[in-house]
Image 1 (tube, rainbow, N blue to C red):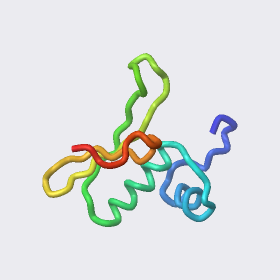
Image 2: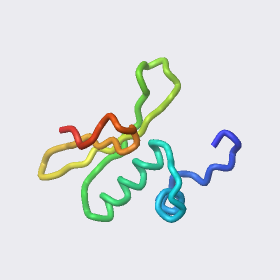
Image 3: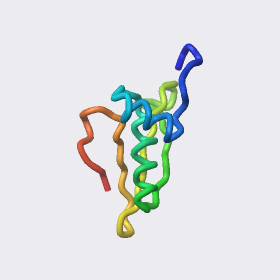
Length: 88
């Protein structure tokens, strides 16, 4: 990404990287393919962008908020091992 050669986070590009080539990724890529899958399955969702730790921190993070049976759930597939399931 820093070299200007990142293919972007469009679902096709992320699917190629994570699924076809079996490579890792960062939160935007994991959240994007997770959201695209949920949309394909018919779920209502929104992607959310936030700061990590403090408002002055320049690092950003992406999560997915999905609605299931009238309840909103925070899903964070790109945060590593700390969150193991959705949070109401």
